[in-house]
Image (cartoon, rainbow, N blue to C red; front, side):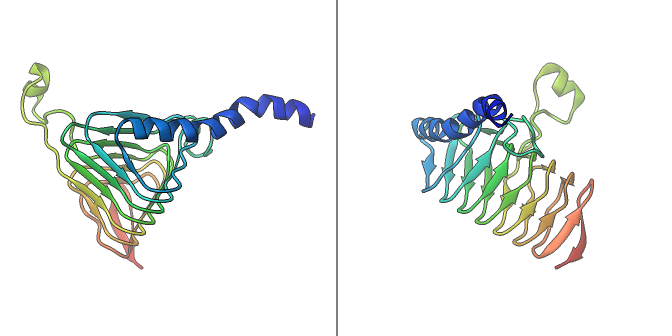
Amino acid sequence: MAIISKLLNFPITLNIKLWPMLNRLMLKSRGVVMGRNICIPGRIYVMGKGKIAIGDDFYFSSGNAVNPISSNLQGALYVEEGAMLTIGCHVGMSSTRIWASKAITIGDHVNIGGGTLITDTDAHSLDWMDRRNNTGEVLSAPIVIENDAWIGAQCIILKGVTIGARTVIGAGSVVTHSIPADCIAVGNPCKVLRKN
């Protein structure tokens, strides 16, 4: 039975061992500035012509059931031309989806739970007629996640938000406005539950 189990898990094991090397090569070919010890098991999508900088000891699990919370959801980094995505040192993510239209900055020692979406743009105009005609202004504003923050699984972080240092955002929260440092915040919309 142990041999059968190993044979059945071989494709997953191969993906987990092969993808980190392939992802580093892909990021380097796209001009991403990378620190030491970048590990990305599983396939990620990297799109757009913006700039990406990643610090040391970055871990990003993606798909292939590497993390059971995010299951087979693949992570994605979409950085539009003229935008900047900056990820600090000692950051961990699981199948996170990031869309940077202006700027997204993630500090050091940040953990981001499985399946979280971080986007600094509305992607479409808020006016229905503009959406129908594919015209109008699309609002965007930078996002900052400060050092030692912990974002729970399946959260949504929206434009113009700053999440303070050492703050914990509860799983499933929708962060529509800035949250101060040193607190626990939860909900939709996300609100401070208590100070640490």
